[in-house]
Length: 326
Image (cartoon, rainbow, N blue to C red; front, side, top):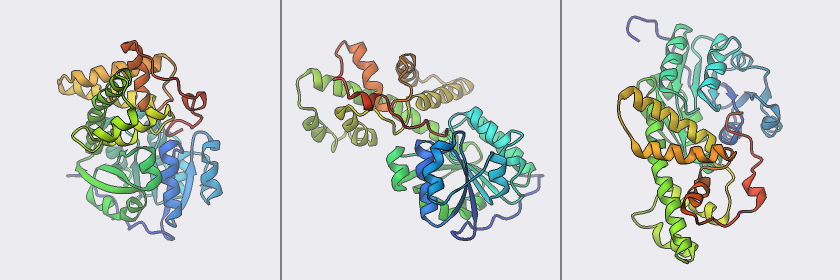
């Protein structure tokens, strides 16, 4: 921030004292906001569809009619929406957060979004006298419900310290990743690592099924060893049960992979594994299965393998959960 004014020092966010704002009540955001309410924080809330927020309103959150209205009532505003264009609208739009958040306030974007947009938001927030953090998360729906998410934070240290109690409510691990945009770039590293790994998990299950192995026994055999991973532990059992409801939706994972591929083009680096994963997940989008969980990759791979995966119950193939951030 050389040559520019520093925002007013942020005050520590404390239950019963600090007014929090939350924008986005999708699969992840709804659970994270609920944990803040359960920790004693007051919460003003906006979501594109009010119906997705009804359970939070019943628990004591206060509805606002726009992101700007959330900001006007809040000291700190968290956003967890779907796509970079949504981030731009709710933060930088004419009825967005930065149009109304008071100087010294903090905005925290938990959306997985474009690193360049995070840098742009930081600069505009600075001109408004506001602190800005890009803070995407990892850990899926289970981590959001249980408060065990990993938060990858880009931005200045003072607001990170001020939000210690908020992060304690929603996260198990908070990692300071560096300058603005670094949280988003770190999250893209996370998604790149997951993308190719999901191909391996789904192909392994298809092989086991075709070989006539008992799949639950096979998972017990391989999960504790070198093949073990978060996805194998948490998502492979869902595949076995035919449960393709989201945790994390295919359409959002494809968005993340495409953000990573955009960064690859900018940095002039080729990642063929990432490109393959994006093309395989894109098949699910083409088949109208973008609202399934990422474990549904097994369905696309089963088609290519000419070995159909056992048909799951229809109620689990067509989840009713709203998309993240909507």
